[in-house]
Length: 491
Image (cartoon, rainbow, N blue to C red; front, side, top):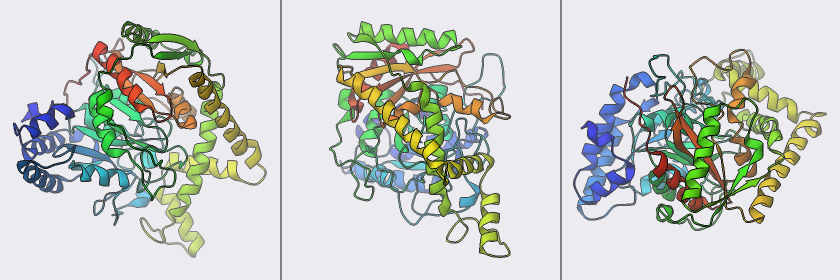
């Protein structure tokens, strides 16, 4: 059974279609793997009965020669996606035992195409975090360990449970969301592939909101091809989300193996940071050589407003979070803590229901939106955001097709190692990823090497709006050159 969990999504799909295995067998193997890996804390809710029923229904369709693009494929769902009749909490105490009566658009499209739900994965509370340590359900442990050491490492965040589940081969792919790097950073930390599509490519309807102008759903998978297959099902127009574009969804898998000859790849000089580890610089150089060998042209570019991206992001995102999280008041759903009056109930509920990081961001956001500070902070941050977007537009206008950068400033770190005394230390993990969200662009993280301790490192490719196909083609070049990175089970 264990060899079934080592299959890629594409391999499993092809074997299911040839009737070389059944979805019931495939799903049972993953259910068993999840049970054996509970020490990772990757899942906050397992749904084995539902998975079995969905797999049997898929097998019935496959037997009749029917079935969608993902028919019978077991997937994991980040606990930010509302799933009808299945508990969805955003990993927050304030949404204790909330069971939606509706399905998010993204997950409904996965079920439409035949996918099987294994359960809900852990994430930072309301997706606020870079290490999956702010979850009400506790931190996720990465399937990776440093050479010769047993200290638990973070899988990255906020989509840490999805990253760990894919890396530990507990599912064939997982949904995730990315507000400032929450798909790409955990992918880089765990040796998996993660793509944040262009803002508006996937519907946000039914996804618990963090920062509405930055949030975007995307897939995490074992390979670039698998991510392309998943995004085909996840993307598409949705009348229920006015920010979701009404554009046809390409056949992303067709971009895999496509020639990259003649593509101009920008290397932004601003991504060379003081004190950046030599091994990050080394894989960045290696990535440039791989793309050059494949026929791409490397050009130096400048994105002068990059240095303002992180501070601007940590004004815009908390401001939108404070607005979005105002709906959690203990009145209609979720946790309720009684007070002497309604104001007391609000205060007691929010104090008990929100964790420390969420409270911090709500307070920052409320402050920067308050009278007298709105112009000084929020309005100025939005102007910086416009300049960041313009930097990219000018590069693309000069014939650059995509950009190659590091995905993270380091490899994974230990649980409890960062951010305890100084939250900004944790925020700096997003330094290479937030620009992509601020500009609304697509970005993919692909495994590209290892550090001296044997931990995976990733490279990021940033593309033109709605040109995810080019990112898949370029990502495949890096993947073919670097090879796969698979964690050795210790759990």
